[in-house]
Amino acid sequence: MKRFTNPRDIYHGKGALEALKGFEGKKAVICVGGGSMKRFGFLDRAKGYLEQAGMEVRIIDGIEPDPSVETVMKGAAAMQEFGPDWIVAIGGGSPIDAAKAMWIKYEYPDTTFEDMCKVFGLPKLRTKAKFCAVSSTSGTATEVTAFSIITDYKKGIKFPIADFEITPDVAIVDPELAETMPQKLVAHTGMDALTHAIEAYVSTVHSEFTDAPAIHSIEMIQRDLVNSYNGDMTARDNMHSAQCLAGIAFSSGLLGIVHSMAHKTGAAFADHGAHIIHGAANAMYLPKVIAFNAKNAEAKKRYAVIADYLKLSGANDDEKVAALIAFVRDLCDKLRIPHGIKFYGADSYPTEQGFVPESVFLERLPSIAANAILDACTGSNPRKPTQEEMEKLLKCCYYDLEVDF
Image (cartoon, rainbow, N blue to C red):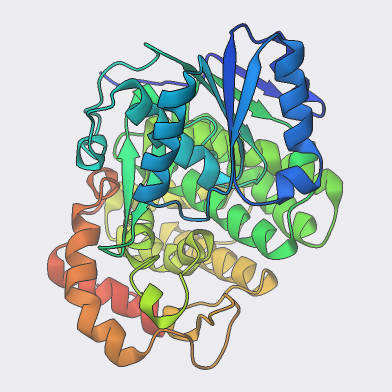
């Protein structure tokens, strides 16, 4: 038996933020990140709509990119003090992911972060509050998913929280919010969305219900991502829908080792001055993982199907897989994303020598590989890597080498 779970309601299209006017409750907390939602007026609009619905509203702001365990615990304490019956998270993946984890701690104050990380092991939520997610970026799709990513900076590891309980009750997918994204964010979130859709399509738990949104999302991303990056706002609006469809696909269809490696490398070199931004990591690793997974016969067939939908060239499945890899690499070039960690600058742009020294990478490689194998996303990957294979794969991702094993 398989399960397909989505939010109870998805409000989409321009003006969808007004759906907040119809919420019923006494108190709402709004979780938000940096200044962009405030600067562009969306935070005030959300607060005003909830107040029109008759609710007292409190704001938890300043949630950082790649939110920490400490931020989660601090926010949950504020919720305990206020007692909301609606939690509304507005912004990119970071504030929404943080708010999901705060929600767990708010409902169950004795829960530890380690408890939260037990895959599909959470108790029933909604005993105190319902959850609404309003996405402002076009990539993570956390507004429709059963996942949250929280960083333990003491360990230098991003941990996924995975449970259908944290699927939001309501998702608001209003493209007006996404029109404010800077160009670099358009690139990284768009490649995150593409990775979600491709990994969900070849996942070992894919189904007809996840295949359909995955394929259509991939087609839309092929059509719209580069145009969105170059400032076409119609394409930008389309990408906001495409990333949500990818989220619907992977929330129930799950992911693979592109995400496992991105989770475990993202903060692994923070002591050298930067993070490997999640969407950029996915973009760099995806071509290597496609080549690795294509050694599995079923995965190869499914990659070839994707290539067919994208109308890529190829007389047989091997040629179609190669064409799909070339398509992803070409997107990286058009979006100014490097092809390997060695060439990843602290500003995320390609450079001859990136911020991660070779000696540091090689020293940390065994532990990064071991942690990636243990990541929640590895279980649904079509090919199960050994420690040796994961280390070799990560080396290919560092040096930008072809995968031939």
